[in-house]
Length: 130
Image (cartoon, rainbow, N blue to C red; front, side):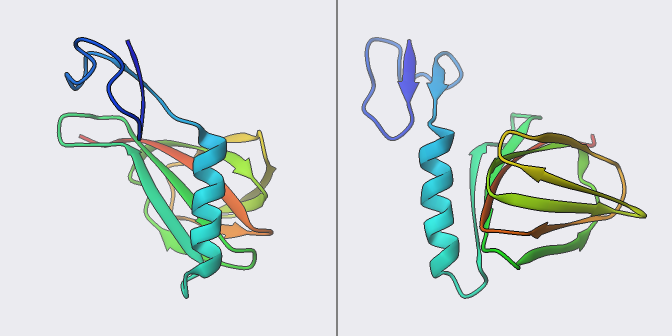
């Protein structure tokens, strides 16, 4: 049974957490978070998509207005960044990478920062260190 987040259960067993597929529209969620980021004083918005104490894999959709950044921070563990909309620059140590919608980068285990070159939405996937 597939449950689309935000909708009603679709059948028997569909409400048992962890026993059903959950489907999301990343395009719709990126649009929603970009709209929220454009309205926010900070110029950013985020929504956790897959998380919880019983889950190692964490996924967060982040949106930034063009010209805004996530300041340099430590790497939380093994991580990838997929650009859903716009253009971003990831800076880690002496390296930098620019990505457009559809691009994916493995984030190195170094302090890094993320800059929105244009209004952008990204999907951050992390497996935290134990």
